[in-house]
Length: 203
Image (cartoon, rainbow, N blue to C red; front, top):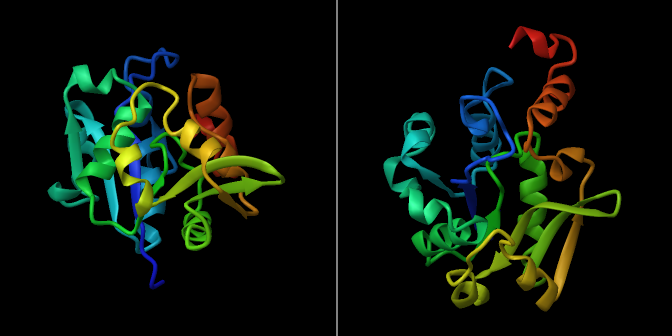
């Protein structure tokens, strides 16, 4: 693929709705962890990847990414929401032709879906994955939106940019683009989808 946007994986959220003693991104999933599986699918695209995370999770992603591709936020910045994490990832790769935002708690998103959104981003300043008419992640942003992306803050992320600019949907046969992990029940459901033959109780 000649058009190579950078995949930004925000993974610094507190996961306040997940009540296990371990962070939701550290939970076992498909032979790895929730975050590890999400990153693996991103890496499989062959596109550049940068993860924005916290110190407690940085060691987990170190085997998958070079240190230069890991942006570590302090706790105060991590509490500033998804928007701030996106801004930090975009700023770390300011020379990219664009950015695909893939939250770290979406381990079912396939590499092919990421590539489909990357291709759609060549057509419009905003692109997103869509499954059966429902918008999901990743969401892509062209380089022309850099100055607005680096000012993002709060939990709404980049929703206002999606509403403001022309957007191209990439319809994909991938229900994973609609599913994230917020609670223990979410994780159990995703495990059953990912490994029906083994069952979640073997993780």
